[in-house]
Image (cartoon, one colour):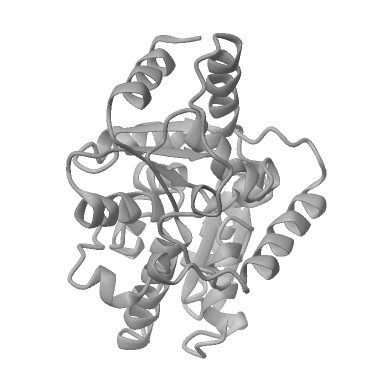
Length: 289
């Protein structure tokens, strides 16, 4: 157990905390059992990032609609943002000035539930650790699914898990959104979730995932001005191929798990916890540059 995880365990024991749960979680965990598991290690509240993703989608659509001649790069993947800033600085201005789902959700919950809560991202990505440090005003820590399991196992072995009643309330997410943005972690998921708005067509989008495809896709984006949106993720298979994912199944099997959860959650609406746009009125969605 490393020093950072021991510090997080102490925070989970002694402070009010919010879990920022990445939308790829169904690949590794069952719902709603995982919600109880997260409460057992000490999380006070648990929110899904799909609510932030919905806010982001509407902002992207507004930007694309108002600037039909411009080309844009999706900024959700922090590794890609750094890669472009370092290798293709001439494209920095094409990166949409909207923060990632992790950052926007962290800003939202600090405002919604209180600045005194510590926010901890749980997801598939190591790069989120650096992004958390760069946005320390709203994101306190970022851990992977593997590290979450490490914390759980450590507490279980030491008889230190919280005793949480298996009630409906304890199985519910504290801010939920059951929309198409649940496909955000899939390769091309961001673009697909915007297509029904008819602001951008399939022919105007480049979808790219995996290190071996990045440079080719960026060069095509630069060369052919007909492409308006570059939906690009560093890991092969998108976030489902992230280094913090435990599941070793083929990508197709992982995609199935996401789509099954998306379909199942369509009928799950805890009314007072259901994320509505009015809840995020005047929230800052911009990136830090």
